[in-house]
Length: 272
Image 1 (cartoon, one colour):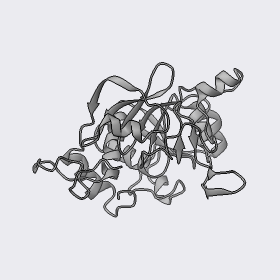
Image 2 (cartoon, one colour):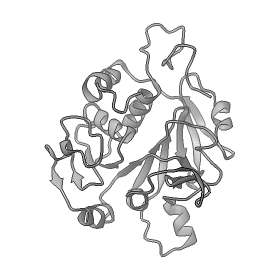
Image 3 (cartoon, helix red, strand yellow):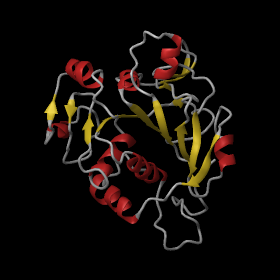
Image 4 (cartoon, rainbow, N blue to C red):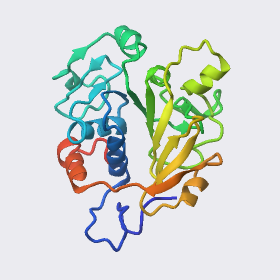
C-alpha cells in the first residue's frame, strides 16, 4: 500500500503539473516540522526527527532548542548530524552536559516540551517497540533497543512519533516487545510509576497523521494526498477510529523542499 500516485516519487495529483514532486521522506519531514511550530525544547532522535527539527529551525521555529541524548542542548550544528555523538553538534551548542545531568535534571525535571521518536512498532495507545520483531529468544529482527527512548516517553510533556511505513506489522494490536510504554498505561498499571508526560499525542506516517483522543487512543486525523481513510484503516492492526473533520494533509511547499534538498540535507543522509 502506498500514498503515491502513478508519478514516481510524487504524492501530488498526476494532473496537477504546477505542484512540486516530493518523496515520502520529504513529506514526513515537512509535516513533522509543522507540528513542531510553537515548541521550545525538543528531545529528538537521529533520522527523520533530526531532519524535521532542522527544517523547523530554518523556517517556522527559529528559536526551537534541540536536545540530544549525548548531552548537547540547544544544538545549532553547521551540518546535519549523522549520530548523536557527531562532532558537529558541539559547534555552536548552548550547553554540553553529562548524561546524568541531562537525564536527571533536564529530562526528568520536566523541561522537555516534545520528545520526538521513531520505532519499529507502535500500538493504539502509543507504546513503542524498538527492541525485537518476533520472539525475544529467537527474533526475526533484533533492533538497537531503547537508548533513552523510555525516559523520553515517560518525562516529555508529549511525544511525537514518525513512522516511515504504515502497515499492520508496524501499527499493531499488540507489540512484540514493549520498549517504551505509554505513560498513561504505565500509570494505570502502577500509580507509583514516575511517568509525568502525556505520552504519544501525534504520529506522522507515510499515509497520514494520527492524533490521540481524550483517552489516549490514536485516531486518524488527516490523510495524505491520494490516500483514503479506508486505506489507512486497512493498514492498521487495530480498529482505527477516525476523528471528526478528517482532512487532507497539506503537501510540502516549494520553500520547504528547497530547504530540505539544498540547505539541510543536500547529501541525502536522511532524505530518500
